[in-house]
Amino acid sequence: MTARLGIITGSEMEISRILEGTREERVGTPFGDPSSAVQIGLIEGKEIAFLYRHGGEHRYPPHRVNHRANIQALSDVGVTNVVGASSVGSLRADIRPTDFVIPSDFVSFWNIPTFHDDEVVHVTPLLDRGLRTKLVDCITDLGYTVHDGGVYVQTTGPRLETRAEIRIFKEFGDLVGMTMPSEATLAVEKDITYASICCVDNYCHGIADEDLSYDVILEHQRRNAERLFNIIARVIEVLA
Image (cartoon, rainbow, N blue to C red; front, side, top):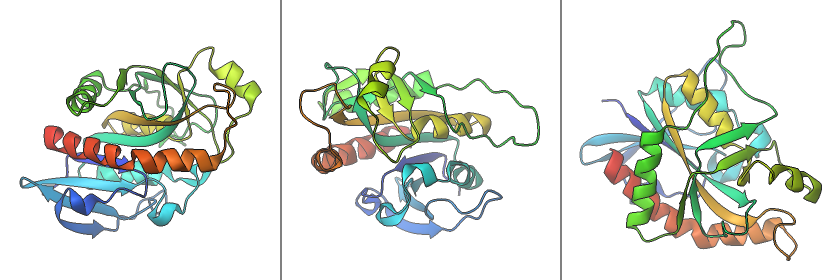
């Protein structure tokens, strides 16, 4: 059996609560080791693959995530559709912490990864509209606030953005994060359908009156963890 659906999440997702008979697949790639072993489990007889973007216990900061190895590993176990879930900051007052966003486009100025280091291959990056629609429906069914569409601006991390940077980014973006466009670009290169669930855990630096700190972001992540778990469970039920 092969897993057609892959889920990339943070380290806090307890997949054993969703899937049966979970096993680890340690997949080596030409690009090094992925962030974690690929966790594969069953739901209604169908295999689902999980990969922890930052590894166990969140060991890899965003600028050290081996996105090429992660996407290659999922491709190697047969994944053809990937849903990535990640934390983001909001550039807009009406996209509030605890909201969810299914982005429709992205901007990435730095460190754009590729599988094609030694050949000329041009791909058109995209977030799949059909998969995005299904994600919006799943979140709506659960009664959570979800924004259909938005532009994700990727920075490199690990530091947060300055107020001056945020003033620039909010002219053309709605969200800021550090990982999703890299995953989406590589997925397209592997002919993998990709869409993202963005969990808004904070306003970006200067968008709200209060000061931004990593402790505040972590607190919002903890508060949102169970809701994100419910969303992932619903997504697997619908897409498996």
